[in-house]
Image (cartoon, rainbow, N blue to C red; front, side, top):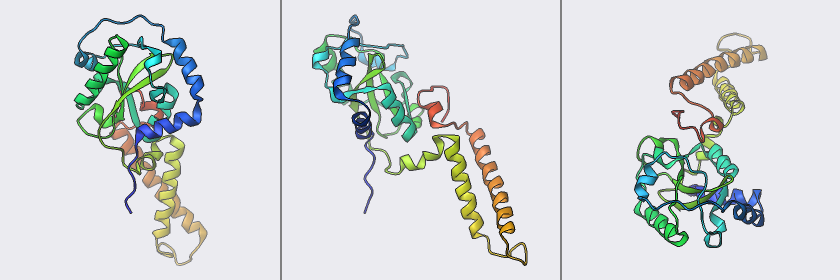
Length: 239
């Protein structure tokens, strides 16, 4: 039986339902949608720009509350699945025509030019082209964002498990300890001594831990790796 791929939009929506009441979302968004409309410019140029915009003057009555997310919810999903949430200007993939069409319809319906686009996607999509589940957002203000469009394929079903060690240094140490223990278990009894003792086991375990930890540290520094909470909205970290 094949595992179902991870729909990151669904995960984000599920998190919102657990963390925040919909009525509270409506109340908060209604308070922040009091900005001045911006002039009409080219959508493609806006998507490629790295300008800072913290809000857009959307018509509150036309927004779908199911697509409104707070920055804390976005951050949590990015950390869990090792994703980035950056300005669309840093995105190196191709934004599909279906996303452009949705932006045009939103701008026509709300009579404004949307600015400050953000994209949630794996780190590699901010360096080279791929097709792994990018999400396009626009800022509403006060930490809220409106999900405009999702495209591409869903994430690997095991992605959250595979990136779990990168959530914190504690997780990474626990993984190294586990691998060290399993590796030590593979060493035949009495290989280094005629007497089978617990002391020999723990000496081998400590040796394995040092070796594996050294490889992990070297790999981390050589490739400029960092933990998920440090990179989810950082445009300078490589990975």
